[in-house]
Length: 249
Length: 249
Image 1 (cartoon, each protein chain N blue to C red):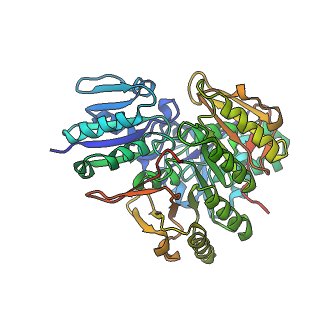
Image 2 (spheres, one colour):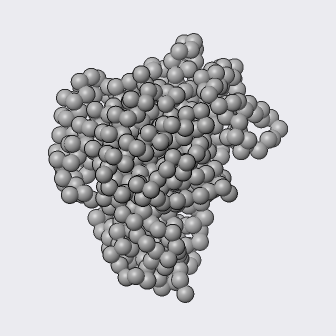
Image 3 (cartoon, each protein chain N blue to C red):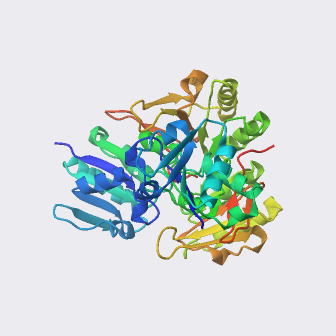
């Protein structure tokens, strides 16, 4: 008797951004595992057990999901956005690799989702229309020196940059350092997009020239996108449109 | 009388990966504009006009869509994947910026989609679970020297790398050069994922050590993901799982 383990992306917040594939997996599940606010998005129903857990227990949560799947249950681990981008998929595979050999016979699938970077970019225009990079600014998982080196190399490569987890209460200084590095390294006034709580009722999008940015413009729910050197702003009757041209000389 | 313009992402191929938001926009449209194979995915219905067009006419297609929206029609420009990632959104904004001032009063929205990189990563495991970059290898839009510089900087930053448009009939040599640069610069045997036609009946996924890769492993329908130095392979009873750990020293 073997169950299944699905690692599913719920997108950035709105149910209109959940893929039919993910909705079908949720409808089939016997157990749903995830961080409290993501599990709270799943309606209760008979035959479904919800297992919400706190932040920063990703490995314990992963082991729990793998154990339940080994016991024959149909488990869905829910992530915000896409599970493969700074979310639960890598954590589950870390737990799988370190766990009992029997887990490697489980039927495990990852179902992609709309990651915050894509939803934020869509709201602002097309800032990721040319080559870009995605960096997790949380220094829980890597040293600041590595983040700083990547920032410098990303500027040198002239990538647009998407920053996940720019700022949290426990480490407010990282984002201030990031902005300081960028102001110096970019040497221009390229647009920075602050996209908070995209696709939820709390959504707030602003576009700020790099030199005018301040660390308090981002919080835990903000995705930050910094344009490349060729990123442009088009003024319209509504909000400005930020896009990066497809070509480069 | 003003119409609307929606730039929508259809995802990589399967209807199970089209968001409800995009499905709703398609159901409301009077006109659908896009590259022939993407428009072919939209079922015909009364009141809907399909406007398929050939590849490499992105700007003409964009102007046509903007003109129809100005005439009061509800136009959807369809893209494969996500419209903001190497797809139609930047082309529409380029046309908008160069076009008549009146176009700037149009109601324009971008609806995100599952871009090929996320769908391919999900099939293989979680290769983009740590910092990564996305590079369009087509040298129609930028010189090879810029691509090569970005490859070197991406390796130095130790990003996982997602490559769009690795290879086409008209420029087969670019991908051979890319592999040659990477074999030399990486100096290790990290996993490379070739994900062809993900989520379609032609789907084919393979994982090949970098030193064993050859240019003919990719074609126009292939997404290529190259792991970072810490990317791991977990052998399972089924296909191997490729993931990049969340943390780095």
